[in-house]
Length: 134
Image: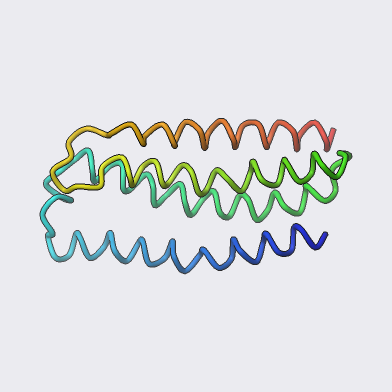
């Protein structure tokens, strides 16, 4: 693996305990019946989606790093592809969580657009990677 991919993988691996802590936090909201979670279906759904996307996308990004180094792309495109793919597990969960911060929020605020931005980033990064591998 390239030094860039190794250091990026290191940062992603450091985020795994944060994702696990997030799962523990969601479990605490359920077990303690904390107001604003179980009684708020919008917040519950978005937080669950944020946690799931964080976990899955971190794993996806770790695997993609192995392929980025093998892609037939200029080094600058490899760096851009790496950044686009790694941005998704940051932007998408942030959008899910921050769009319903207050327990009383029953509609997502404008930060929900971070989810779409993360999706665009993921799409562009994987398209670039796919082209580089074909």
